[in-house]
Length: 562
Image (cartoon, rainbow, N blue to C red; front, side, top):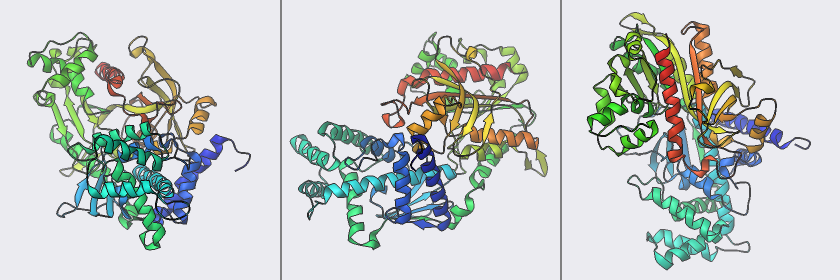
């Protein structure tokens, strides 16, 4: 690849990774330490995703990236030698333990001590996500083995001590813990302080009720031990399988069809067929807190602060459930039963009273009761899943031997995104979506403007790049999208797929050409700045202001829409 720029090499490597991954899915299996797996590893090292930090450095084990991955993978995956990805398995009447990662909604089952099954319900993006994480773990495991096994012969004393500690089942304390962390830091090629910090972060999640990981000592030991076993015998090689049901699911909206049918059946049963529907893709709290928060606090005898964002903190402090209050006033929570992992809320604004809503929200209560919009709030989709669910939701359906269609007046997308031109917590408004790795680009007639938001708040306007996945972000590629003629302001995973579904629905006549479309993102990370990548952790309270500012603007636009 001589003569290519860094960004060109990275884009070629991303394309190579995707092509190999697609081929392996249809082949049905591969071994991460085999030839196909090595090709995946080479591609991943070339484009070196930002969240994987120092993965490409053979001397040190990447700790922040390891934390990021283990928060999003099921407990015990580090020691498995057999991993199955399938599309439709019913484990409800089995003894297999269902495990859910801390920070990723995915289904996985422990089949045996060395075998885990992933049930893929969210499409290709979820498959790429799993494969990149597994490839990362295999690369880091190889580094651990090289440190555990001395260059001359035998096992290092630090590895022997780690093995004894893990097998003893003892949780070290005091000087024993200091010594154990010191030994581990030598294996990892990290400083004592870096290792200690990682140990403490692992311990926090390990000690939670559901035990989201096995702790740092056990995780590192099992990663290295698995690779050592591979080198002792080819029969121990980790193998990843893709079942025929998974291969057949690709491109078919199996789970999305079930999900959309449940939503539309609820709307039909509640006589919303003739009402104006406004779809909102957002979290499961902001719209409820905005529309019911003030009334909820008053009912609890709590003074409502003049500041909207201060009110949110008060709602958190109240022990009562705001959902119970809202359910008495037109709110319904539809928990997902389709395995799509997307819950839904429906708000009938006909039951909203003036004292429910915070005074900072500008709207006309008479117009609200006259137009009676129905707000359908969808939880966050994952990558390509966004196309599947919206494509199914916008099409007509069939109930009681009659065709049923709904009047969708607006689609409002609030997303978390990486920013390229600002800082974490800023807001981005999309003018288009550029699909990374494809020739597909979508111009957006965004019904949002800087003037709609609080004065002096940092708002960025421009194209957004829709990437293949969070695990496939490369700094050089992102710099090129930002600094070239594209002038991209940020990156995200769903916007382009939502826009594909909207365009398809307009072409098919399911929604009008003049449907209002709104895209607003708040910056969860900045992959171009050290310490602001996704591996740096969550936004915390920094995300409150942009989240509720966007929610307020969405509601005001929905209510004012004739």
